[in-house]
Length: 424
Image (cartoon, rainbow, N blue to C red; front, side):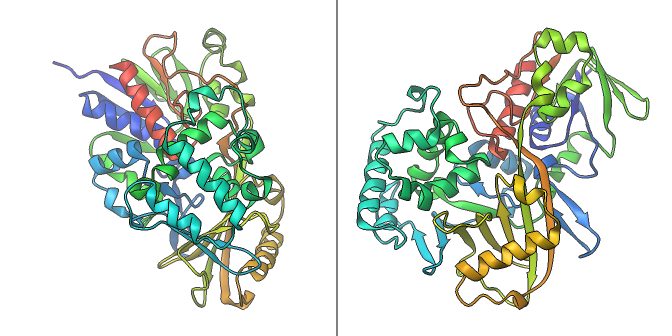
């Protein structure tokens, strides 16, 4: 019996997830990707100047990324991500580092001690944060009840003061949404907090890949025909016409591109029928990442957050063995328009202000990566598109589709799984 054939257009995490699931279900799958590596906006590429692969941007994993970790477990690469046993973050600020370290207690109880000993917050702010956590633990903060609310307004209504939001919640919001709290949908933030951070234990722990991100996905090559450096020009029914003129015929097509690219692959009549004319105009938020080779380690902890109480565009600092350090600026439209030399000067000023004793001479070499369209921006209250379409044999996948999650690696992986299930 001949296997059903599917073509997946796009080799990001969504496309790889869909391709893996379809192959596991018995489909014969071809994946085409214009880039020369898998992972898309969360992939890696060879950097000739340093003779090594660097990620398009630094990405943190969360212990609650169940879909992602299940996929990598099946691929055999889950052990390539290093997780701390529980949540540990060092907040950098002008008064010195402040450790937020969950205790070795079950569930959210471990966070109780972390807040009590967290020097960045005063007594009133600690009580506010603990009250919020208690409500979430008891199930009083139902994401489905938040409607068209922004995260900052919701946090204020939950008794979180503006100072507490700036010091503590804002870095998390920027990491999750690549957008500030007043532009982030509250239901999505509440879900991430409930299922991850406030759940405690390993679910709230942060993880860093020990290998370039694209390497986490390379087992796909054993299950799927992966064609890198080959972009799709047009999708016509169940045919995918490649940029070199080759035509791939199949029983189904998974369109797993970024929203601003997806509608360009389809005929105008199909775009109109699906109602996705506006995808190409969907706004995106940039991320700027600086990789720095240093003469010595200088961060007080492997994963650090820059406190939003101190002004500076960079939000996260991560120490990576064998590489050095990486510094991430989310929602970085201003930085993305600057030359690399100016970005490095801004980073150095921020490090001088927030890392005690830092000397710019400690950075020997640096590389600046700009992802102008790192993540889609969801308008508050905006309905997202289903993976299913009205066109037989055509499904959508991507972090921008309706997953109930923010535009993260976890959302992308879930979208691919849902797209594959829609075809099954």
